[in-house]
Length: 426
Ligand SMILES: [Zn+2]
Image (tube, rainbow, N blue to C red; front, side):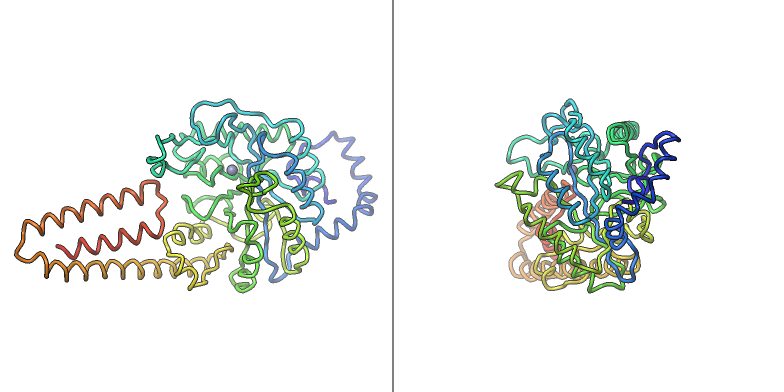
């Protein structure tokens, strides 16, 4: 195995004497561990054209399924696949979705042991996944009002002092219980704001892994490694990366314990055999460079704020109709691109979106012009009534679609058409 300081970062060092003993034992350990070392080097050594592939396993906490996590960690160890595990230090005791005050549940002894063993075996990074993974967003009434509920976050809109406290205390717990100093922060529900970025940078975190959305400060010195695909899509993402090697693509795979049917037979979308098959396939590929988020942050070029700025396409894809996405395969969704490629990709996506919704608005204008000339000419009262109704409908649509800042293509299409229709009535 590699020296622990390389694998684990700033894991607590022992006494001076024990350090001397360690150095004395290095040649022996080196000989014994040679096959594993050779394997790790083969995987992490930079090779021209090798595609960085990172696995991020979220939501490890006092409430997550330890037996399943053990099986998952073993599967990664068996195949010598590095893994970043995002740990919640004091998970909310009642519900993550209820902002009412709740006690935090400490990581149980069994979980701490499992994580320590995984860290000692090597190839595993522990990232900080918030503090309690509890939403700060208020709950909204009954089933009819639920669509108006905002998406969840533990950090968005939270004042700086509270964010600083959560992040500092969470990191201290991991340091105390696991003996690691977390360098990577994974915000719960991938939700964060500019204050989070500032606090992370001030606290010495090097890496933020969220999604391809969210604010970014172009002066930030953090490295950004957002999730690019799910576990089921690894092969597709790798294929897409192979087709665009010149764009220096990388793939960040996100999964959770609750994705597994072994945890939830109803909601689970994959199984342990699926994971083993995927990891077996990954192990058989010779052009992948398997890494943790921390190692990627240390070893890969760029990953800066500007690259993230241009790679944030989640909302653009969300407002593009599915049939367009099926027709146009570029830019590939499962990969994070280099800055020049991401810039080209985003400009292209904006052109597609503007052309699409501009055409729809134009169609709305043409139809209302034609209809109003035929039906409303000489009827001023009716014409004004129609105008007022249409403007009210447009405002209602805008409110409905943008209320949670999560617009989808159908909503944006309806707004474009209605805006065009209103314009045609003027
Ligand atoms: Zn989470």
